[in-house]
Length: 170
Image (cartoon, rainbow, N blue to C red; front, top):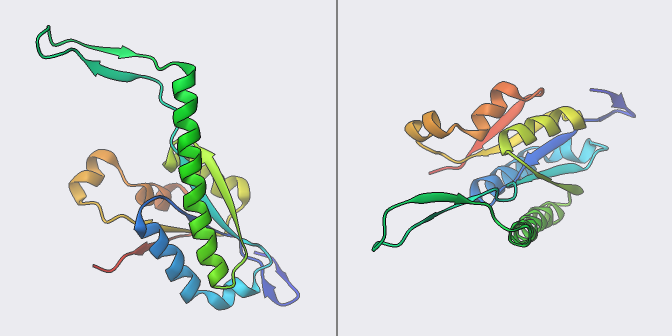
């Protein structure tokens, strides 16, 4: 971390998704780190990962015929339409987060990436030289975390910076 003109020069990234826990983490960070945010020369980075376009769909045969499953690749038009819809939804989610920052007097920039959330967040931390990653904890049960994994858990162990995981009160 460099110090210039007496101000902290931390680059902070907040991972945002459609879940309310990420908004809670953002607001909690804005309220509890107001002084260090105002001293930073970097805007707060609001980062979101959009799911990749569909590669195949599984359709089942009707009940009257044999129960067969087959993979059918979507047409390029369908895949593009789904991807555009996802981009619009993701952009709206990021704009809501940016307006929360503006209401707290914080300059923020948004970044939207397509891919797997776990990998994309850790890659962005390294690429952007982020000093602190802020995530919301979805509060999934232990069994679900064992089978599906947790984005926050993955980032705690793999991100190349300190990770602040904010739990939403019950």
